[in-house]
Length: 402
Image (cartoon, rainbow, N blue to C red):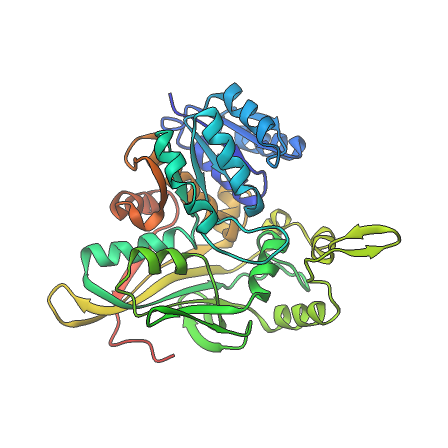
């Protein structure tokens, strides 16, 4: 029996439990919990209609360690899959340790009062998970997640040494809205407005947010402007692949998105510090999130494709210079037809399911806290092809020129 408890009923949680239900021989019991049980119930109805599998639902405030511990003890899962907000990572890890369950997430912890993305808080749990003989797997989404697995697969099979790495994240989808985010607006805007950082020659180089722009022609999408950003897998890859001389992360944004975001920043709506309004303390970004379209609602109208991958340059196993590009292209409409969610949720929810499947089957195992690049990439890569995220790889003529 491989029971799992999934916490979080947004688009990613919806995709993950749909895909788990489609693999009922691996996941023999699925419970979906969130702060709003009605969201879980709606997802459960969709899962039942699409797969004929019944999943259980529960209400939980994941900030409440005692209540989360009690829920885990009641469900008795082998694994807790955390698809809630990154602010809740530590409380759910605490509950897993208290209740005796393994842990998986898709995004690293960040404090709610500061847009600071670091693994140090979760890496600090290493000794506790070792002592409890439990495993925690961090970042089993697409980026982070698949991008780290892509990198390590290239290293395992093609490279003697990787010198430079560029992670390229393109969402070429059109949802028809003047301004909306394809995943949690609060997390999305915190990421985008934070200073950019990349790894170069053994140190972090910081530049102003959205100040470095390059055009790139993405297969299946076309030419798009991509912007240099900071993303958490840069930290873990630089740690676990110390040979890297440079590692960068790029994400595409349309002109309309940039225009709206600039205005919102200029008028203070992206602030994360509290302000007083009519005697009530509110956080402007949280208010903005409440008035923006719910990302899970964008599925029916989103058309186009995503294209996410890695370009690595270094020395091949034959001792010659080598540059390779590995990526996945995912169609928004295909993702919606299968799970009722658009491709941004799909490309995170499917890897969450795959990481969970490898853990509950013991293919990926260990005691302690692990990042994706510490695991054998081959079984994960095989499952990507089997479960809706096929990848392709090609050799380029030379290093990138940007």
